[in-house]
Structures are given as C-alpha cells and as structure tokens.
Image (cartoon, rainbow, N blue to C red; front, side, top):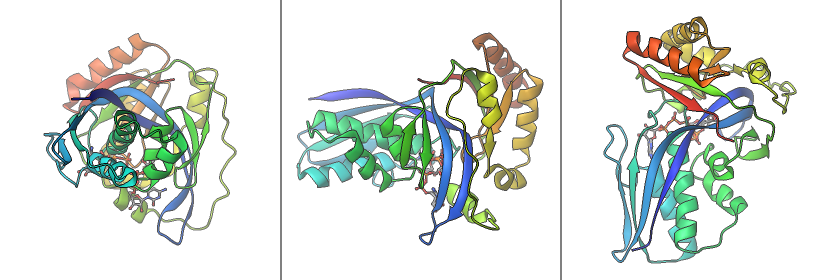
Length: 281
Ligand SMILES: C[C@](O)(CO)[C@H](O)COP(=O)(O)OP(=O)(O)OC[C@H]1O[C@@H](n2ccc(N)nc2=O)[C@H](O)[C@@H]1O
Ligand SMILES: Nc1ncnc2c1ncn2[C@@H]1O[C@H](COP(=O)(O)OP(=O)(O)OP(=O)(O)O)[C@@H](O)[C@H]1O
C-alpha cells in the first residue's frame, strides 16, 4: 500500500494585530507567523477499503470526522471524485488547544500528503484555498514559509530574512478555546495597524516586533501566562510572548545552550509542558 510519513510543525505568532471584526464574525488580522521544530508526525496510507479513518489516541482529540485531519482528507476526496480509502495515524506531540496551531498543521499536512499520494496535481494556491475552508491557520501551513499573514490569516507574503533562533515553549496544561478568546476581545474601533518590519537580521529585530492583541484577553482569565513570561525573561530570554490565542508562551534565545538551560530550570519547578524548539526556515 502507498504510504507517506510527514512532519506537521507547530507555529508561533511573533506578531498578532487584530484590525477589525468582520460581518461574518471573523477578524481581519496582520500577523507574523513562524513554523517551529516542535512537530506532530502523520502517516497517511492509501487503502482498498473505502472511507477515511483517523487514529490519534490523544485525550481531547477526536478520532473520526471531528478530527480536522479527517475533514482535510474528505475535502480532497470529494473534490477529486476518487473512491480511495485513506488511513491517517497521528502522533500528537504538539499541545492541544494551545495557540500553537497543531490541528491546523495536521490538516495542512494531510492536504499536501493526499495530493501527493493520489497524484492530484493541485497547486499550493489551490490547496491553500481548500485549507481556509477548514480553518484560518491552515493556509499558512500549506504555504510552508515564515510569513506576513493578512485577511483572516489566508493572505500570505513570505518573509525571507529570518535569523537562526531558539525558543523555549511553555504550556501550563490549560486548554484555551480560540473562539472564546476572539469572542471576548473588545475592539473599540477599526485599527489601521502598524507598519510591521519584514527584515529580521538578529534576535533583537524579532524582539522589537513582539506583540499580540489577544494576550490581555487570555491573561485576564489565566494570569499564570504573565508569570511564565516573567520566568522566561528572568531565565535569560531576549523576549517572551503568548502565541496565538494562548495559553502557550515562547521565549526567544540567540543560542541553543541558553534555551536548554532555561527550559531545564523552568521544567524542574513547574510540572508544565516545557520544550526547546528551533525556528524553521
Ligand atoms: C489565533 C490564531 O491561531 C493566530 O494564528 C488564528 O487566528 C486562529 O486560527 P484557527 O484556529 O485556524 O481559526 P478557526 O478554526 O478558523 O476559527 C476558530 C475561531 O476563531 C475565530 N477567528 C479565527 C480567525 C480569525 N481571523 N478571526 C476569528 O475571529 C473564529 O470566529 C472562530 O470562532
Ligand atoms: N488533529 C487535531 N489536533 C488537535 N486538535 C484537534 C485535531 N482535530 C480536531 N481537534 C480539536 O480542535 C481543538 C483545537 O485544537 P488545536 O490544538 O488545533 O488548537 P490551537 O493550538 O489553539 O490552534 P490555533 O493556534 O490554530 O488556535 C481541540 O479542542 C481538538 O479537540
């Protein structure tokens, strides 16, 4: 049977400006999005038995049609008119409902993998169009590069100049609903949005853009996020920010050694999910 095993990376948002609420309830954003080396692993296998089967085995993540990876495979099967069977096995390493885009990345990886396995020949642009019908973060993972993301997240411009960078990822094991965070955001008026630089020579340039409009919403419910930011800075991070809708916080480090040392000291005292990751280029 034809099979593919692929990595589905997590993301962090170096910047997240919410510009306005749209009539459809979504929000126009301006973001800088970065893939990181913390990955789920996905094996996709074509089968003679029609139907889509997803095995994940992680508490809080559904196995069947409730899994966004299932919906990604279903979208491509419907579009192609093929009757193939598809088995998807997900090894979940990315914390769930964490602001790290894990489900979106799984879905994008299935779009890319099924396109290849079935020889559908769909372009990246077409897969991104299908991706946004599954979730706002999915096109970014299909795009596969550090990017300025606009619209609801689906209008992507590559950012070429990204410095080598290490980060400590800290998740306090509290699931946060993205819908709740956007729903709780109080926007007084439409923002024009700052001009965000697109060239980053060193860690200091990345630290200069760090900002997330969703942070105050999630911190007001989970103050521990603010404490994690302080711990990361006290452990030597050049900057620290909540990713996406949270609650995961990342701290930036110019060297792997600094990141490993900080992760060790925070991991020892906290009982949280703590890991070191690299920015992917
Ligand atoms: C917070 C981020 O992760 C930042 O990258 C994304 O904006 C969220 O992307 P996502 O989880 O893929 O979003 P979806 O699954 O499409 O939507 C989840 C919820 O977030 C809200 N949502 C999402 C994206 C967006 N631009 N505006 C929104 O208001 C939607 O109303 C929805 O209720
Ligand atoms: N493959 C999947 N991986 C993780 N969660 C999934 C998956 N499929 C469905 N879900 C459901 O989606 C919800 C959110 O999952 P996810 O981990 O993608 O959130 P997130 O990290 O906050 O994403 P984002 O940063 O895009 O907001 C969970 O409650 C989970 O049950």
